[in-house]
Length: 481
Ligand SMILES: Nc1nc2c(ncn2[C@@H]2O[C@H](COP(=O)(O)OP(=O)(O)OP(=O)(O)O)[C@@H](O)[C@H]2O)c(=O)[nH]1
Ligand SMILES: [Mg+2]
Image 1 (cartoon, rainbow, N blue to C red):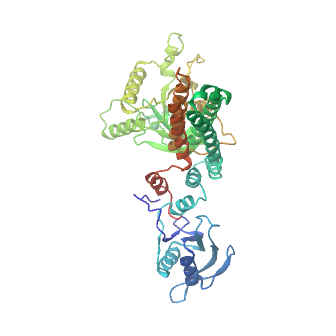
Image 2 (image 1 turned 90 degrees about the vertical axis):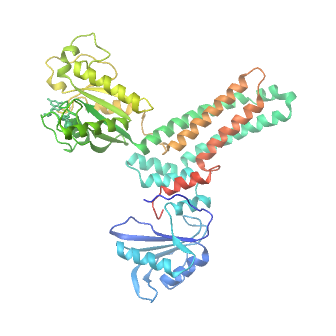
Image 3 (image 1 turned 180 degrees about the horizontal axis):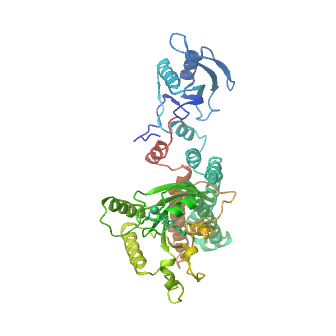
């Protein structure tokens, strides 16, 4: 992956890049995209013949002296029927890093007006040539970087236009309503009657309802794309590393009965129902004079600052006396050390994060309790990292906390940018509604809010995308895509 500061979407250069991942592989692909003239000169130089469009041609790829660099398959896609919408040449050779570099250099030297493609530039050209809209282009990048099967499936749906179609549908309805209101503004004497007859406010309510549903799906899509950082914290020896191992099903972190075993934060990616979660095991929190452990504890606080969910582990047995009485329902873990730690945790989270980090208390080692555990509040779960008791409940509770519903068939991948545009559009619709409800019905303001809502929706598919926004989006692609 490469990041660049600016992209110049208007240049006419032919671009070329290795499209396959670096390293060794059975096949490596070089892709070039640009003008008819340059692409034809390039295929003559490297393949020594004119290629029939969309036909696979096997043959030598030659250097400037006519000596073969590699043998492989060449494909020519004339504009506009190509990925970028331009003339495209694809050379499928052997996937070795040296042979690919030789072939790339040969292409760069074979013609003028050709240069290395920047990250995401092929897809950017596809967008600029109307082969796909912005949400679809983002779907391409999200498919490539998908961490789970569900994320990949959702990215394909975005890429195929499922998300974009929902946005287009909303935009069409907003435009219809705008037309009504703008027409009314031109004939003010009829306004109230006219809008009422057309059920303008009913229409607005339906748009709001539909937008709410799209936003809800987009939130699920964003979860699948971004994943969630789940941090395990607590006193030493409560079983954090054991829980990491239990959740991942692997022997990742060292577990001993010695308090202060974990020093570094240890992370492992897992998935629950297709949602990627990053489980982070940390050094137990306590006062210590040990220099190494102190650094570990600092890292724990760092991990807490980046947490999306904090799981506070306590030893169920150490809290048993309070667990068997009924006066502590709101805080089942209230042995003095845990209570103190809990207060410290809340204080740090409030100081260091600008959002409310969800918090769950895990009463671990439930297998060691002498009496059956009593019921606890909604923020606590009994668990045994050793026997696995309570793990399924923990998984379900985690999904609930992060707001994941289920992978519906029409989930599409979404980004923060999309969520923010949908929320802003929703706000504008709410303000529009408020204007419509006032006594003197400020219709001009009502119309303006509808326009702003439409602008937000359009920004998702790129209809009103500013150039700097495009630069940021495409520069996060890999080279060759
Ligand atoms: N009986 C029982 N023992 C457990 C359970 N979970 C962990 N243990 C034991 O508790 C001890 C400490 O476990 P760890 O997972 O290393 O605890 P930790 O919280 O990571 O400790 P530090 O790394 O020192 O902070 C080990 O001897 C584990 O076998 C459990 O659910 N039941
Ligand atoms: Mg540990």
